[in-house]
Length: 195
Ligand SMILES: Nc1ncnc2c1ncn2[C@@H]1O[C@H](COP(=O)(O)OP(=O)(O)OP(=O)(O)O)[C@@H](O)[C@H]1O
Image (cartoon, rainbow, N blue to C red; front, side, top):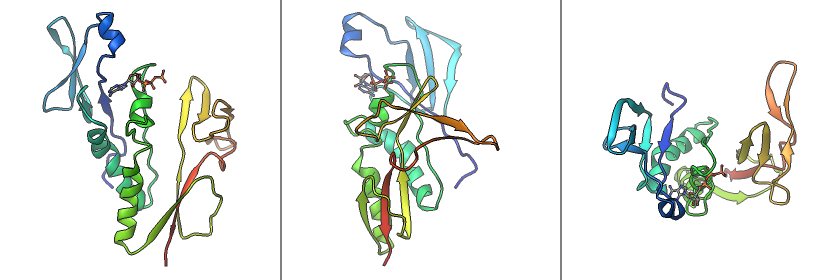
């Protein structure tokens, strides 16, 4: 794993139909061939309004491109035993759900993610079962996945199918660690059996 633990990507979504109908204007564009974006008004770009990220994706970027650039490298680190988090941040309607959980091949739902793990495990002569909501820890390797939404002070478990509106209790322990109650049911487990 490299020295940099955080990578920041900016994704610009296309204007929605209703925005086009209301004649909303595009005010941010990616700088072609670079991980930069620029803000502008009309055709005017102010050099002070160019911002640099680790990656920048324009409205034409596909889910594949975002996945391959930002998420795929995390899967390799995962198999080396590291935790990985994909965190989407932005105002309402900016495309967080589309990117992360969207049914149009959002990062979380991509079979790709799972298949990629399977391929890596298979490559080592092992096999995999994908099990949801199963409390089995007797296997040699388990991968836990959680999908949470943090909105204002509220943390919601988006894998809790029955009641994902329920706000989880965030607590600090006496050592200053922050966590939330009820860990077990809200996670999916990938269980790898090693023969
Ligand atoms: N890259 C994209 N390409 C095409 N449509 C997109 C893209 N990103 C977002 N959208 C569309 O924009 C709308 C808003 O996106 P989304 O619901 O993901 O926003 P959000 O940030 O999750 O909002 P909220 O915080 O309110 O839940 C949706 O209709 C979604 O389909």
